[in-house]
Image 1 (cartoon, one colour):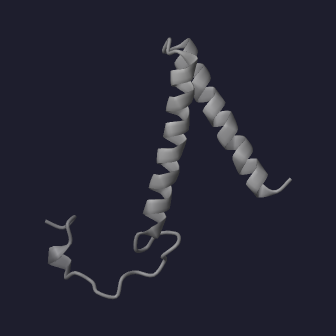
Image 2 (image 1 turned 90 degrees about the horizontal axis):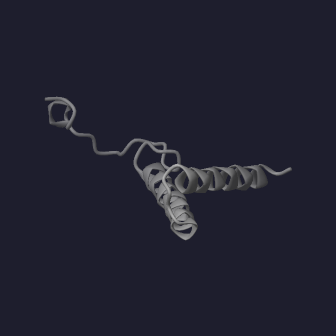
Length: 77
């Protein structure tokens, strides 16, 4: 089995599990639970792709050429 098929199968299992939780524990209508699960998967995929494109991310592993001085980095106060 290709890894692509395994990923799709895992995503399907996660989506079905989320729908079951929303319907039985949250008492949501099934159509709303399905829409929420699909939206959650879509937003998660978009956020992962966005984060991977950032400098130092998976698709852009090299740091940017221009670096801020150490005192100007947001996490150093």
